[in-house]
View 1: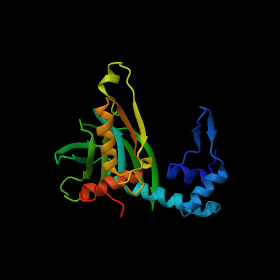
View 2: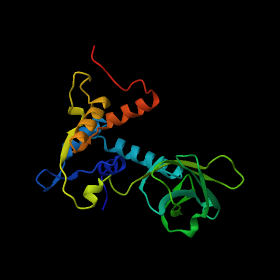
View 3: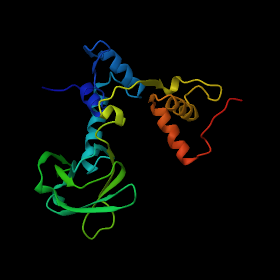
View 4: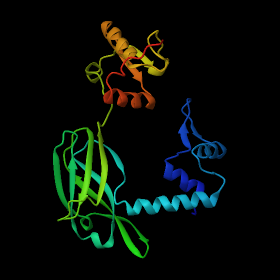
Length: 246
C-alpha cells in the first residue's frame, strides 16, 4: 500500500487522527482539519511534493544522527534503543556512557550486531543499518544523558537526552490500600484570585494545597505546558514565584 505524502508527514510529526470522543466512541479528525493544522505549523498541506521532500530530508537526518535527540521511557531494568550506524561501525564495540541526573557515570560496551537488525538504508552510496540494542542498567527516574563513543575517541559519535519516567502516576497510599477518598479536581489555569494574572499562578496552587489538605482532601491539579515552562523559569529565577496585579 502506497502512503500519501500527507500520511507520511502526519507520522513524522506524530499526528494521529484517531481518538475516542466524550461518549467513548471511536472518532476520526477530518482531513480538512488536519490540513488546517499543518498549515498553521507553517507548511503547505496541499503541496504533495513539498511534504514528500520534507519527509525525505527528515528521514535522511534520522539515519545520519545515529540516535534521536531525546528518548522518554518508563523505568525498567533494561531499555531498548534504536541506533543507526554506517556499515563500517556495526561490528565495532562502542562505548555507551550514561551520565545520570546526579552526575554519576555508567558505561556499557556493546557491539550492535549482537542485537536485532530492524532496518537498513543507503545514503550517498553508504549503507546504514539500524539495530535495536538493549541497555541493561538500573536508572532512577529523571533526566539523564546518553553518549556513544568510539574507543580511543573523546568526542561522542552521538548524544541523546534520556528521560526516565515512573511506570504510573503517583497514587496516594489510601487509594493503594483500596480506601475510598474524596477530593477536589482543579484546572490550574482556571484558578482566579486577586494575586494572579489570570493564568493560574503557583502561589495559588500552594494556597489550594494547604487549604484542601487542612480539610483532609486530595487535590488533583491539571497543569498545562505553559505552566511547565513557567516552572522552569522559576527554577532558573526563583524571584519570579509570585506575580501580583498592579
